Length: 189
Image (cartoon, rainbow, N blue to C red; front, side, top):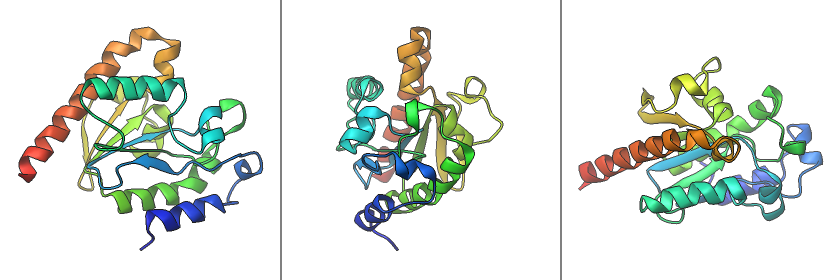
């Protein structure tokens, strides 16, 4: 079984799709690799590509601020990554071919981290993890049990920067994640 370091090296050398031609850095993931919670977004943006870290731009700062308000911290309580490990040009939505090229890496991350909770941040993540046909507005905030994982979708934090009316629902969804996390931690004691 690959370790996270070995997976990081494999991703850094990836040429499975054309996104490798324009990337500055690959962005595997960050946080506690032994966490019970994994957040999965869409793809790196410009800041993430430049720094090689997920969710470090404005959307990531918004997400961290919301999670920190729930006493939930990246280095302690969760692991965060994206479907795609390279930035699509102009921050466009990844194509099916690009996402499919990266899914084996995401599956390996899930095997390594062993989360009990997977949080899909946005429609692209929900499409590849929950249901290719589902609309984020129809499935967000609802728990799905699949293959031993508790899965929930919510809006991508970038969507909140474009439409503040989604913030309340996003906050409610994050509170559900924290409640489920606390429930799992209590059961482990």
